[in-house]
Image (cartoon, each protein chain N blue to C red):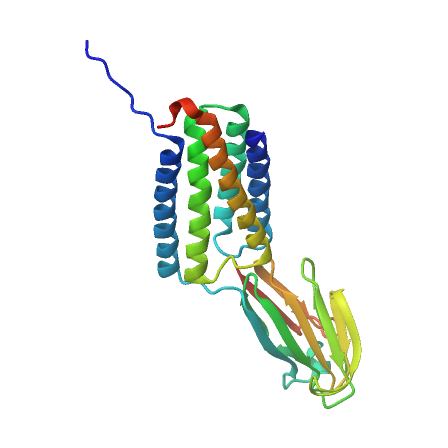
Length: 168
Length: 113
């Protein structure tokens, strides 16, 4: 019977071989993913949000004519979202911005039409803010959860509702 | 000692991977769950000292593979470049060194050539 001899690798040689194989395999896989997958890294996305009014008689139709413009905001999961919300009413009518759980947001309300006006109030981790005519609210949050989430003006329901679409 | 520190690091990285996939990744988060689960499983394997001559180098290779995979994917996509990922990968690098030392110790001087 012939005797077989098992050649043992030294620990250093074994580690070197394993490391080289792992590095080559990891780099090949990672570079392939990098080149083949269309992916946008999380970024900051800014939107300008206004109240809007449809041309119908609210008393006749028994519902508010107010809507959001835009009524769809689409971002990627992980994005930082900044919404510049402006109350552009020509009457003394308040508007509100509300989001349900899980989303909350930070908000800074300014006394005028831009962020250069003095700060009226600042809220952290809130789900609700109301602004008067000619005020601006800067709303910020991170889109941590994928899905479709409504944002609403609670004063003008059901028509003044938009949807945040978070692509996951 | 090296074995138990490796086990601890494997569990830490495993749970951190799962946390990252759950809370943030935004990019193939399911893969982070899988990577974390594999780390936790390999932590149990290393703790039980099952087939150490195979298991220890294999887990070392896995750690190096994931480190390089993360680095090259980050270069190509910009994904995974945040504090949690940096911490995760720093621990993973320590784990790789720990496993390399463990492999050297486990094999003993009599087998060195």
